[in-house]
Image (tube, rainbow, N blue to C red; front, top):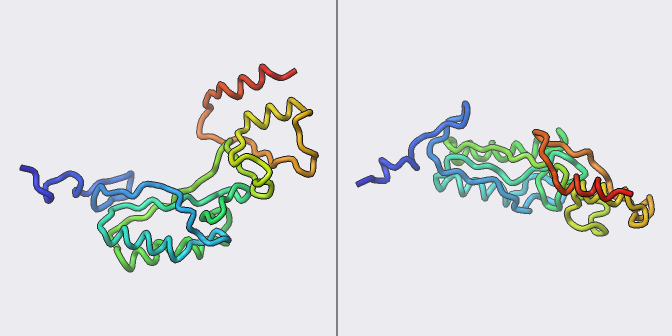
Length: 173
């Protein structure tokens, strides 16, 4: 019979050079719980401390935006050095409450799924680049220039085939 002591779940593990005390990992999520300005809230610090004290070996934080034009309301921000003091609260408090728990910051960029913070109320929540390309090819659908959405060049770790984008190319006049 396998006991808790013998279970692989409680065995240490490595992720690259990082050793974690067990295989309980709090996966990356989005809590929508930072301050309005994008700083780490007391709620988030308390949440991570509670998880760490409960025995989690690794916590991957809430999404932290690395692009200022696509920050979610009440989302953490990591798009400027000015947010470093706020972000430092998480590992500082974690070391005090559960020094054997590791913490990793989840960096978030929407890639081609860009949300324009300024015009967000006028746009659908997610505007794929393929849709924007289609709109560009059909001027009759465009908003007046002062209301045009911010366009971001897509960034990805590799060239990924996008059938929708190819389809919009074939639809151009």
